[in-house]
Length: 205
Image 1: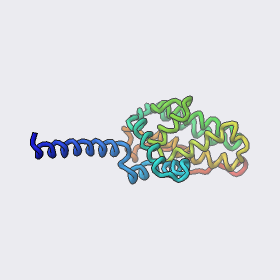
Image 2: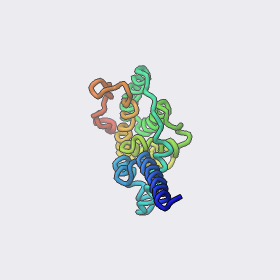
Image 3: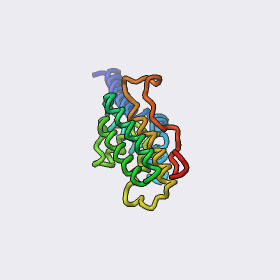
Image 4: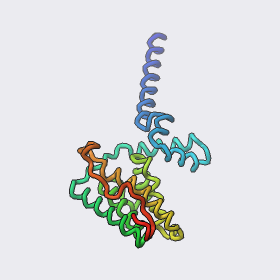
């Protein structure tokens, strides 16, 4: 084989390898800029978790996208969606009389809703949160706060902390319950009380 053919063959091999790397990077979020756009606050959390090591954080986030990025959440039937919406509205009302119990039930409701959409079961909590962070990175932290408040380690949370966790978790609830292939923004159902703040007893909802 002539030197020219060897050089051409090497160029082809290198080009194929580079293309494969670029394709893999694209699927994983499009490089650093893509990861930051995709994960938003979760990107910053990952960097903090790795003590400022950006490379380690991006390696972790890339692995999450590769593991959960192909997950295709199933749309909710209209009847199930209406039931979830009604249940959440009831939790907001019950929060006034029993904030902690409402938060505990909200944690369970969101985990069940996520499972119904096709996310990993909440029994595998790390996988459950990882998958949600890939698809709902800008809303998942509120759910994380509710889960913590509902646990034994969160029993000392004040009513105001419970209220804030509940309000933030509602963002993920709304995305999960409304984000369906068949819905356009103008035809999506509303969430009762979605703009009203949860307040302690005596101050209204």
